[in-house]
Image 1 (cartoon, rainbow, N blue to C red):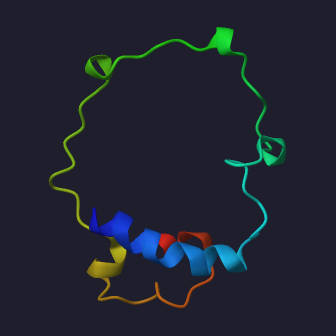
Image 2 (cartoon, one colour):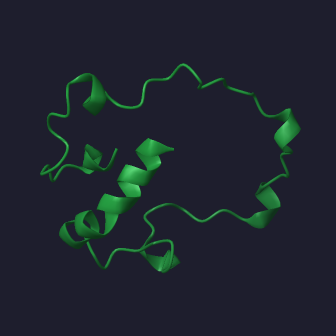
Length: 80
């Protein structure tokens, strides 16, 4: 959750530098992905999904490296 929180805090500033008008979640015509017909989709229930234990996952590579390289970076990975 800390990783998600940090990414959310930095998102507005990051988005201003990276295609601020590109919002395919609001404007589907901007999406480079092909559309899917609803008839091709199927319902998948949560109880049928694989349960992956993430309790032993470390927070981020930034914490392992002592905080280097995340703050002022313009690359796409700087959100995480």
